[in-house]
Image (tube, rainbow, N blue to C red; front, side, top):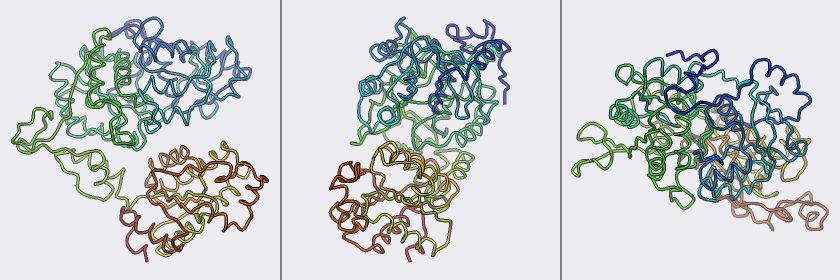
Length: 586
């Protein structure tokens, strides 16, 4: 693979050529960085989330040029209203740093904030220029065009962002450490210098968060040939969409597909970007970032950076809205749009064509992402017209059939609904078969061994459920079975757990929907009576809500069936979905 080592001090040539204006370099000189490190103990600090760390990295190395730090309230307002910075430069996506109120209380305008990674290493210092509380719903509407929580970007803002934001310029002290695919992680300055040195003046960038199949290969090959350009495959290896394949698998697939291109027309480089799934605005943002990396052309296909369908199965954005937005701004931006529609396989021609160019007498074939996942889950054949054999082999290795993967069964319901009983019966039935390890994470057990210091506030309940989710995801990753039985009353954190586990294997949510009166009648500890009398505060179902899940795979009322009958239903579902062999149902 080509070595893109960083130039010693990124001279002016590498910073401005071959495309675009000067890159912003926010890294402090060695002497200044050492001085900042020495001051760390005297500064308030903030441990960055994974998304924030990705944003910081692209700020520091110039990938987010012309930004010089996390945006202030005035800058965010300008971006939301006009897709421009206050000085008029195009910039469609807010890049903010949200922090906890307890941290914000230690800050003041004119002060400084140390930005740390998860191990406490100081990566940068932020010079505080603004502190404010964003209107989260208005920010969601402006960025994503919707306030619906079924949009993943909106859901992140509503459920995972802190309510205080801090803005100001950045002094970089140390870039985040990446131990994977280090030879493919290039700064904009290094990539620009290499492109210029090799004489590549026309470069088509291809953005992807998925493996590349034959349709992608044909599209990118045609794009480069049509524009007499070279091709840069520039996949996102930061946060993408829940359910996407991990970037390790995807990069292995990208490396294998490189050999399919003729000559020396293609290179691969990784982009540490946290996607927002903001559709048209994000397409424009992606083009700006690729300009910073030295590209002259940018491929935008159908529903670029869209999150798919909403709860009513309608797309959040029109399929080609991203192309239309970039087309309107391409001349100002200096990056030419390469528009492609959906590519389909035409069996009669044994090749791919844009869907609109298929002759009426032909039978175009396509395979959706959900169908591909179904075939992988059930161990079915993946047709060679859809993907190259070496890519199919890599996908099977990463996503084996469900019967060979771990999974989590997550019970949720009111206290006394029967969750623990069902989990224990299911545990016994699975251990009778003995095909793989099974771990029970019952609410009371977890409270005693993992969360004994937590109370019962909403914040502490969410922490407890996240801990259960983390342990379950690790069990699932190692191909075991996790059975979880907390109350888990809040929908947002249950969805977080689902996303966490589904990155590693299967997830089945069982809503134990036993009525409140039945649960209260069963209560041997007298908790419901104490809550109704006001002696216990914040009790789920009495003076604290239980948010019923709309995404449960199974809904079971234990007032209407025995535990064995309920577990039979669960085992039948697991068998139907391919997680278990029929022997488990006894």
